[in-house]
Image (cartoon, rainbow, N blue to C red):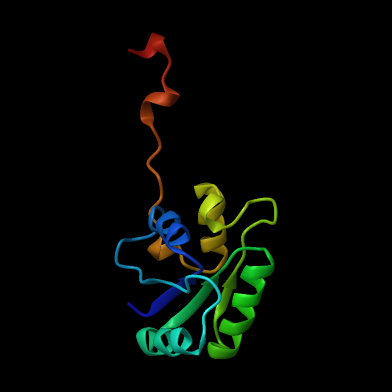
Length: 123
């Protein structure tokens, strides 16, 4: 796989895994990364195209700033300010943001419930 997504924590990773193909690599910073963690990320990710998806708060912005220096060609994905982090962002909005980043081929779209469009008279 030639992409990698970086998020802050395991709950963010879990939330994204619900809407992405299972083999998409998602890496966690586990808070503000130090130099050892940044080196590990650089080695683990290698030459993959990086997508940074951190929370829209002061901590997330600080992490994004550090990652921007490490991965200057990274694409940045943002969650809405009203959501308390990536882990609490509704799946529909996550999908919308992933589509904006051009990641459609990796998205697992929810199946529409066919029963929800039928009326009782159609049975």
